[in-house]
Length: 358
Image 1 (cartoon, rainbow, N blue to C red):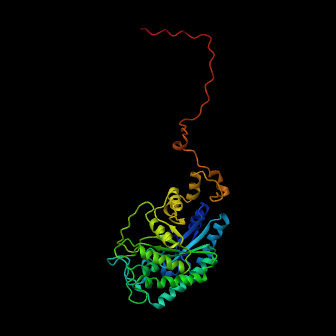
Image 2 (spheres, helix red, strand yellow):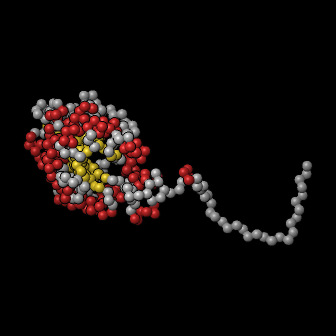
Image 3 (cartoon, helix red, strand yellow):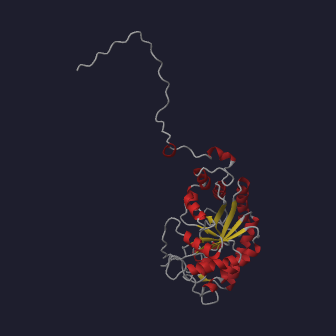
């Protein structure tokens, strides 16, 4: 999730507390979201980055804390925001602004020199991520960012070898992935996040999503994080519970590539249903995890699970059992203080109470 809490791209104390707490919350993998590969690749001034030594050291502080306190894997998502970048003249596949009406600048169409610099920036950021101690790397190829801009026909209007049919639109994203795969350790997972549907006429369809997933896997992606939308502002997504899961299901069961399901997945019933039905290999929980950083531990407690898959930190174990609640355990509330009963008074004679008159 985008936190926008960094200063000059450097994550600070808030990020330490946030990611540290998430790591202690029982999740198998915690992803630090949307980290820019260069200063001009940020979505806004608060976007964290990974292009300087200072940033790398700050991330190392976070991974060291998380690894020292839990066995949760920690990952980071690298991105170039493309036409969604804040400030300056953004870079994009084609000179199409993110919003109409002149409210945002028209981006500059990337030339070969620009593309070479972007490849270099992704490679250097990936090397820094490895040195900083991250276990997993994710490349953001969705949500209207630069790579997404090349993949979608709605945002890629190029007439050169990087535009036109889906195979051409894939060329540059595959160049970046192959270059990153060459430097990212083989023993660490490499994920790619995509927008499998644009939710707008003329955008990506199911066949495109399958084609893109196959190509990314062949280039070295270990799993596809299947999101949708945020590519064009006039999208019309059908929001609803687990509304993006069908695309993870389609890609997984058509291609055999491992997938991560995302989007309005908020309860353990949702997760269990997706995983047990074979619709995805992993489920990513975002806003629900912000609402409850101990989401996984609480889900385990609610289902009566106590074991190694949901370990409580030693200092928190007193809270590992689900507390009693009136609705579930029928514990009546106590509405007054307990009082000692009054001492009995010895009386030798009590007057008889006259019977009531009929």
